[in-house]
Figure (cartoon, rainbow, N blue to C red):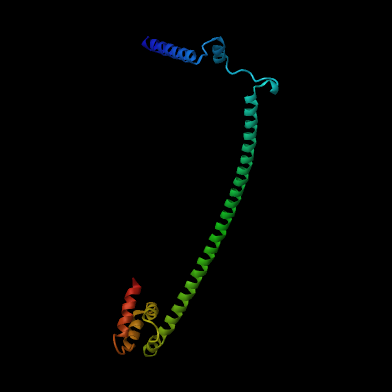
Length: 185
């Protein structure tokens, strides 16, 4: 019951406020009330019968509609160009990925070839007498010698390291052993 009374009070307050606003604006008459109740007046049948301001508004609306159509066409063209560029981008990405895959395969093959050559050199040096293998290795850098020696049996590796000439300064065998230790990890 209280809710019904509250709703009724709200409706009456709204109607009172509407009546006060209509009275202040001078529209509290039969014509003003009919306009509120019946909605907007129907458009005139002849454009010549329409008020002057309405013709200007209609012309402006037509002009705006044409501009909107042009903008929509331009937007559609830009959208088509964007889709085309996205397709090209996807195609280029695919081609780039294929090139990267080929390059990685080539690098893997080159690494395998390099490893095979190093293994062949290690096998050849292991088959040699340590006294003859050591002078051949003395011309190489300690890192290269270490990579070759890692591929040999420990006995052969020890025999070659025993023969390597220490020369002046730090022992070349010690430097090679240090390089061996670093390359194992």
